[in-house]
Length: 359
Ligand code: RAM
Image (cartoon, rainbow, N blue to C red; front, side, top):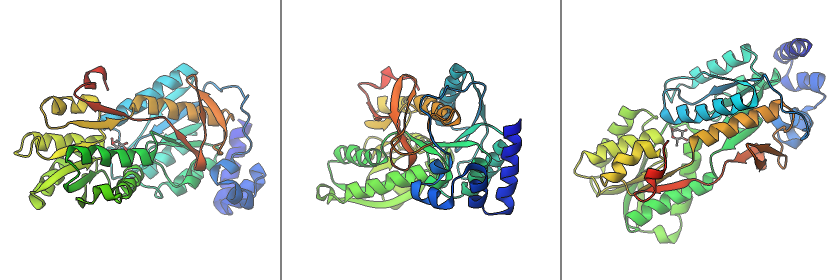
């Protein structure tokens, strides 16, 4: 109780003074320390790797979109981990992948409910920052997973895989399928999505290699993680570029809708499609010859690691600083630059292995 009321008075102080001043008064960290040591992690004090894992915590999950099967699977992974650790799970979130103000309201709701930690997949790198900083000012640990915010707006980011690997390998997959020649397009999610935009930057970097000199990226379209819009955007791409050779869709909603469009059109098997999809969504299209290969990580494992990271932060075992280590589900993870924790390597799915996966 005392801790809660201290938190509240510190939060109130943060509201009337500058946050940095309030942090100094409440936690002994100066603005200068925060700047030097890397933002949110520095403000969180010192890690004690031997601290006991706390039980009875509440962790709120806030995905980009609640009615997206990818997040349903991811967040179930988080729920299972929290149950195992003796803590509670809750989930809130918008139904549209482009509702940043909705996400802000949900952050504020979780803060008002005084959760111990929140795991957020951000629709936009900056839009949630004020709300997340207020949450952190109230002692709430903030983990981003799947799609990051700016590094100073959270304690740690649980990343599905190296963003560079993901971006580059999607180009490599498509280039092989189209014989390193022809026009290609990208069908992305929301225009502001941190994760997709980072991957697209790396796709463009990969395309700078002279071996791709005969490939031309003609357009990046946005389907907003909405099935209908993604379907229509695919149709639009083929209308605008009838000689298109391939599409990369780095979103589970986008790739499924694009596959659906292609498989019912004269472009089936001719226009190649790859990107990030779930095996269960894509099985039909691999089997009917629309799609050769695509990739993804295990979304449930991502949610699991996000939950365990949130609990490690709330238990004081880590603060999010580079070099700190913690054990999650029997594996040791080291926090990298800017508080990034990598889940591992993605899997490439094709006709040979797709039936061994069920998610
Ligand atoms: C969609 C979302 C999510 C992304 C996956 C690949 O479900 O945009 O953020 O990680 O696709």
